[in-house]
Length: 307
Image (cartoon, rainbow, N blue to C red; front, top):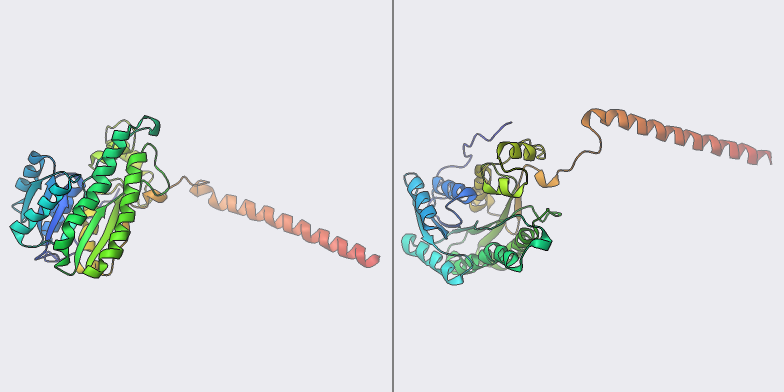
């Protein structure tokens, strides 16, 4: 298995002078997004509901970057306004918003409670709207501002036991396109990223099935990823840096799939070693049918000419 070198292709000053707000930025994929935004020059405010998680993230990252945190619940619009106000108060501007806060769990649709469905929709979809709406006036002040919504590939087709999360992520993708259309005139680009299975995340163990032991589960997932490995949080963070940089300056309204081709995977109809043999057999049978047809046509013509 190969993994990325995790050496950024972007210059460390790519996002210098910019200020970012990352919801869910204290753990998981959000933490690595926070790290990479900071390593590329941005000052970052992270938010979440757990004070101790946010504090730990800031303690770990502060030697490398400019970072602070504010607690809040993305389901509450007034909390989202406070997140934005805190970023403006501490750093004087806001250029980047990454909506990474999310909730999920496995559930049979017939056993999924209305409250469970509502909770995921509110954290993922309503939260994305609330933070974006609370940020728009600040983002308008600086052309080249960017919103990145972390989505998923669950709804590209369908995913077992994910009625709530699939609906929430599909709505986020739609919201991404609508906000890009409406806010482009303000110089705000709005894009999404749909991660695939990511190493070291609770989501890989919790959502992919298996016994939850980690290694065997990841091996099972990697078998179904054409590129041959599970992703890393670094892969997602690099996509965020790209979208927020001038390199992504003409990208808006698009949800970038970063999953190694996993969502497209399906078992082959025949094994790789049997492809040529099966193909030749089919071609041979086809030639025989064509040959028999031509013989029959010739016979008919001859019989007709004798008449």
